[in-house]
Image (tube, rainbow over all chains, first blue to last red; front, side, top):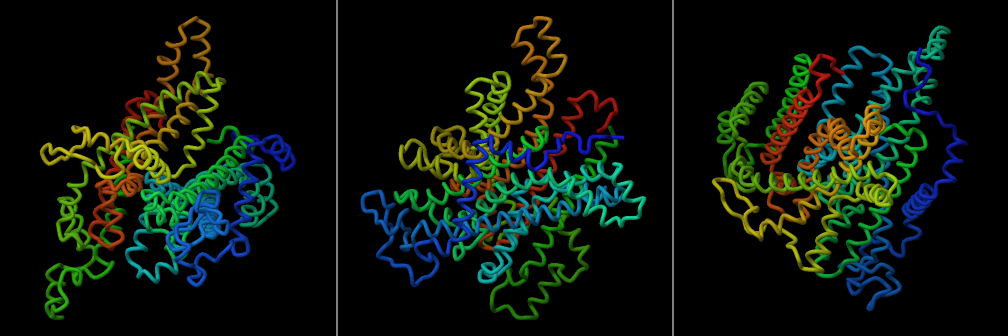
Length: 308
Length: 324
């Protein structure tokens, strides 16, 4: 019998992890940045100097003001304004909110779908396992971004513009989530198949615990560690995917822009010298993705040095 | 081995049928093909006649077979917006995408592999630390942000390189190439860097990880103990064994280059198939979307098959029948 609960996975308890965390300055810095961004996004309506999507709050005479520290800057508009007199900082805060919402939504969707199918495949084995894992194999041969792009492109091409604006957020979460489920399913299946053979599962079966209870109450918590790493790194990927799709014009519409939409709209100003309209959204996007990646990288090393 | 190949062929066929089915559904059921072909004043009777003539009243399986038959012969219908055969449009755009993808792939491989080897062999050197930090930054940089940054630096600020288009192109048969003119080559630099940078960081990380693992193997220690030269050990013994998974994954990453060429072509207004596709999306030009989907699906399937066969050819253990 295999004594190692999961090959290559060193079980770490919460207190060990916390102690390791306190000794990792990079991970702490990354977490601080993430917390800062999340707080800014969640409380955007209260923090932002103006509501950037309320036409009544915009004044065209404030258009194209550079950041406050440059000559011609205005301290009311810390990061400058765009061509419609919209405060860039406010647009950023609201945009980050949308980007995070799609990113987290997509990761949760992908994880739930992947975990459920992985558990099912690992527990039942046989034909169910073959079907689920073959489907995952086939999907993995196509780049995730292309699958998400196709789904979004279809939605964009078939729905009327008004209807598309209403459902864009949901479509994005679905598209990115669907594109990412196979990874979770693979990890879960391997974990579940190993756990199934262990003593505690057999004991639970013998005393007549219902299978669904065994899977959800006993196996799931034991295989969830590896999914944590996948989900963290997946969040960075989902945020970047969302930005890419919105940049291509198949993601969030300009009426509720994400960071990607802001960059798409602002890219034309790159040539006319108003760099701040596009530079700040890009900077926030990269910092956010980098912080999440750094945290995920650290988490992977801390939980399981061999998981690639 | 035969079973392995048969399985892969079956998988490839499954992907192609799925792609064809989606393309077909798009083509026939999204919007009304008839109203896309006729004018406002066409009478209902004429429309019904056209429906009948186009075979839109046939059983759907028959229509699907018909669609596949046409697609196999390169007939994807006529673009709604441009009013030209889709196959002509794709053929025109193919060279631009092919040259962009090839240039990025070469750049990614010829910088990523040496950097990865270096980072593994001298893994305690400060340069290796900088490399591993940079590669994490690399995977966090979205392609379009890299592209815009390069445009701002090299095109807007310094004015060294063009920021859009292919520059001057030369016709060689039906193929248009930008590789033979100075302007064409200059235009290629920024898009190829943009598209290749992400894969370069990825390849560097992968080569480093594989090399580190191989360098710890017993046979490398033996070679060291025997006093073989460092270079012989690294290139002749270590790299060969590390190369196997690297080649497989690089092959698969070629598909990702094609996917992200859509993004790069949009940033640089590069007149390739990706740009054609994205423009088709905003005009709901279904025939182009369907054709692109099929073509890309076919390229992926082909790449995957080639990689599988290469894997078989390179790993003697697989040929002996020990299939993982």
